[in-house]
Length: 316
View (cartoon, rainbow, N blue to C red):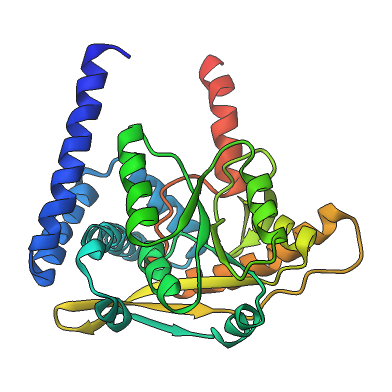
């Protein structure tokens, strides 16, 4: 790697680690206010990530006018930054403080499976705060086994990995070739683990096309494929940030009923049906509270097709 990019990556890591430590020392209202200010600057600069968030919101809420859409986008950016405030501060929270932040409903069927010594799967979108949810889950449901997308630089990814595995007690598999096999092997042991998987974006070439909040989108097939292969129940899970007071935020988590995995049909058909059932639950939550969906990448088929056409159009 050339010297300048290497120095830039190193500076990013140092800033990241300094921010992680400093935010633990700030009072929560001040930390939230600081990141709200940063979010406002990012929104005004209107970079590619903000533009993509606005485009995604426009697809799921086509009823909004330009001013309403801009207001929604600004709120979405604030809530995306709120995730980092909470993630950075999480190591300093006691278990009781985590419990105070999280309100969860619908866990009874999932807990019944775990109490019988069986594993469970969860289909998550990029809503709310999955790290905070994982901390609560590890305290009250069982051992969490999941997948994390690799970040650049590698040292930053390793810092998140160390935090989730060392301080939260999770088992994390990097998203790479062979990960599906490792997850499948874990489920086949029959150990009562919770396996939540962020799935509202296809990181591979094997995703499933679904209807998501009224638009065709490509999402990950992994959760449904694991359910088809193992018979482990698959629960859609959605999350949103809510105010607990004037200067306090918390996380509301909804565990939806396990989806029906068809017993008949080809494997591809069964995976597609189970994935669509998960997308139905996620899509309804996104439509109701789009500001809690932190999706700053392309997921909708129309946008993915436009990106593929771009080189040819540029050449023409």
